[in-house]
Amino acid sequence: MQTVRLQEIKHPLVSEQNLKLFILRLDELNPEMSGNKLFKLHYNIAEMKKQGKSTLLSFGGTFSNHIAATAAAGKIHNINTIGIIRGDEVINHTLETAKENGMKLDFVSRDDYRRKGSDDFIKMLHDKWGDFYLVPEGGANELGVKGCEEIMQHITINFNYVCCAVGTGTTLAGVANSLQTNQKAIGFMALKGADNITNEIRKYNTNNRFSIVSDYHFGGYAKINKQLSDFVDTFYKEHNIMLDYVYTAKMMYGIFDLIAKKRFGANSTLVAIHTGGLQGNKGFIH
Ligand SMILES: Cc1ncc(COP(=O)(O)O)c(C=O)c1O
Image (tube, rainbow, N blue to C red; front, side, top):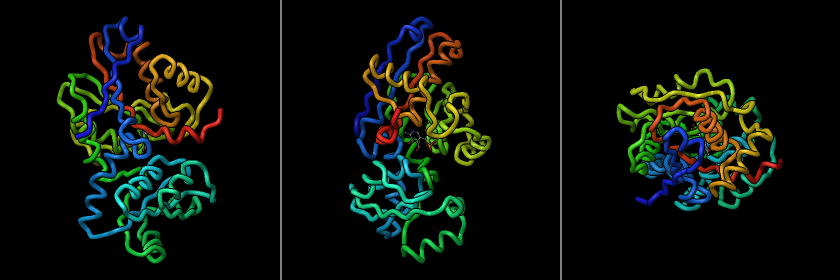
């Protein structure tokens, strides 16, 4: 097992309340297939090989970290990858790199994209692309959760809270599945209007050792403002850790705000998971 750095974040706000805060540097695992992606794809690729398939198809938006990681995984594992991309054809850093890693891109309208779970749409994809192993958007399936359960093997200290950013909730479900009774997972929503997320997570998690915080989405998915980008800059200057704007910045901002509001019991130890996604920062101009 590759060693992952558990870096302590030293900050007056944290020490004043006798808290300890660490960040699990999954972002350092692999620059293109970093963070939670490695874990989400691991068992899916194993299953694909078991089924004797050689093509992996998945879905995402134009800035999708999951698409970037799937393409990189294709190159590393020598498998064909197809990305079904939402919206008009654009080539940005994410998609350019995906193409360089050998992914075939198929742009579909937003209406068609909404049908991505339906049998007739998937049949149409099979007619067009032939045989493939399908991984849902965001790597959100049972095998993705199973992989994310293994993230927790990298936390080798005693802790009370583990925090992660939430998109589909796959990572949070896996993390929560691996917790002891005295531990809790806190998921910070990266998008707005996720009323159903708790039910989605409960499909894969039965121990209920998680809660969702939805106050730090900054207006919605990939929405940022000066407050958030200043936070990212300061965090980088103080700790030499880059956060991604879409997910981990919002989580870390939320953690500091909750600490300031004294929401964690004194002497608690918190671990924040850096789930990577830094490739996406190249798409942000601010
Ligand atoms: C960097 C980063 N962090 C967190 C998440 C959220 O993960 P999940 O979809 O499992 O909730 C994602 C989405 O894949 C991501 O790219």
